[in-house]
Structure formats: C-alpha cells, structure tokens
Image: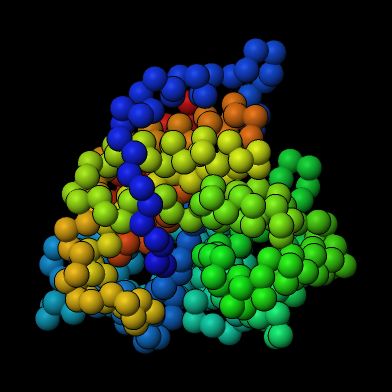
Length: 368
C-alpha cells in the first residue's frame, strides 16, 4: 500500500513522557488488549499482476532476504511467491498465535478480486484456533455517492461471523482507511455524503445480525473533525512514518509512532494504536509497482528507516500493548504494521528459508 509521509519526531521528544502514559491510573485495573497484525495479501494469486509486481520488487539480491518462507528461488535465480495453498495460511495462523497475536486485519477488496484470496483462505481454514479477523477497507473501494459499492453490504454481512473481531462490549470492529478530504469531496460530495454511507453501513450490519460496528477511521489527528462528521467511533493508522527519513534508525520510527498515539488521543477519540515493524520502500522505488503510477524508478532511494532488531520491534509492540492497557483513550486493541508488507519494510511473517526471529521475540515480549 502507499501511505503519505509524516513529520519525523526525535527520540528526545518522548524521553520524559513514556513512563507516565504507560503507568496504570491509580485505582483502575489495566484492561485486556487484543493485538493483531495488518495483512495486505499480494501473493495468494500466482500470475496475477499484483503477485508479479511484488515478485519483481523483491527479486534483486539485496531484497531477497525479505521473501516469505514459502517463496521459491529456482536454479536460474527466478523467484516465485505462492501463498495460495490452504496449508500456508494454516501455518501462518499457527505462527501468529504462537507469538500471542489475536487477530489478522485484512485489507479487504471486492469479492472475486485476487487480493481477497488471503481472507478467503483464512475463512476456509479449519485451524483458526481462536484467531479472529477484521477488515480494513480503502475509501476508494466504497464506491461513490452515486454508486455505492456492493462491497459495503458484503462487509456488513461478513461481520456477523463468530470469528470476527469484536470490542469488549460485542461490537464488530471495522477500519476505513486511505481517506483524504479531497477524496471525500470527489467521491461523496463532502462529509455529509460519507456520513450517510456510514449510517447505511451500520444499518446493514445490524440488519445482518452483526450489531453496530465499532468504526475506526484510519486518519491523521488533523482529520478528527472529519471523523466526527461521519460518525466514527475511533481513530487509527495504517502506517506511521516520515517519508523523508533518510536512513534514520528504527528507534526514530518507534518514537514517531508512540508520539502519534498520544496525538490521536488528544482529539478526544478512542484510539487503536499502530506499532511499526519497519518502513523501507526501496524495493518498490527501484522497481515501481503498477498501482503507484507516481513513483519514478530510483527516485527517493535515500528515504527509509534502518531495519530494527527483533528485540527492538518486539519492545515497541509491547509498548503499544501497554499503552492500550493503561490509556483512557484505548479501544482495547492494538495493531501492528504489518504481517506481510515485506516490500514496504514492515513484516512479521518468517522470511526465507525460515527466519522467525521477529515472532520469537514478540512471543517473549507479549508473554510479560
């Protein structure tokens, strides 16, 4: 996915405040928190344009260490990434559960799309073992005011699944992301049009027996006004990164994310904080993908964060969990970017041949 660059915050900004917002408030027990990872499933449809593009971006030798554990490299050096087998998804579920993850947040697409194959494999798994799911939808996939997408009602119905992620009071969780004021005006005629669509979505979910959705708008704090206008319940983020960070240390990325949680909470909304497993788009910069038509090959290779050590990533995720445990604005959930955004630099999935060090570190950190 493509996310806009955000302003970088230095570690010093947060140095004095971490202990304060992680400490439980007197007289109030820390709440249970469900932790999940974002999935953007680009390699469940071998031969599709998306899978081919990701194979191409990860083909250079310097990026092959990011290939998922089920990728193949033939004797000629050609790579093939095929996550379409049920046993691959079943193993991913088991691996996620071993690291104390509670749900996958699937970037959801229209029925029949190659990009929906991952969610379909999850739903057909007989090995979910308590793993839950929810959906993240791009606003552009909701259609327009003149022609709302059928996907809206599909998602409303899917939320009645007993395995769908729910809040502590039983509301199915739904994320709407990649929202801008310009897009709201172009597609929905302004906030009132999108507000009407959100109301219809809520009604469709209730009619389907799913209960009123807990609606999370993935947007910067500056769009809190829009979130109120459309009737969102909480704010969240798909990614939190500075697109102009030039080889910055991973610690800077973690600090930026952690500061953003407090900024979102200052709006008065409930918050689903996002922890960052990394941010380094250089594979896509060197080999642009079709859905990023704006990207010129090689333009911006200097902008990235250094890869975090497994223990650094796990500690950051644990702080995300603790923020949600103890902060008054918490929605009782935490997200991680990401399970499998490997060519953008954020991943937890074991990499080829089988490096699960990030998950092992996460298992230890979240067990505390």
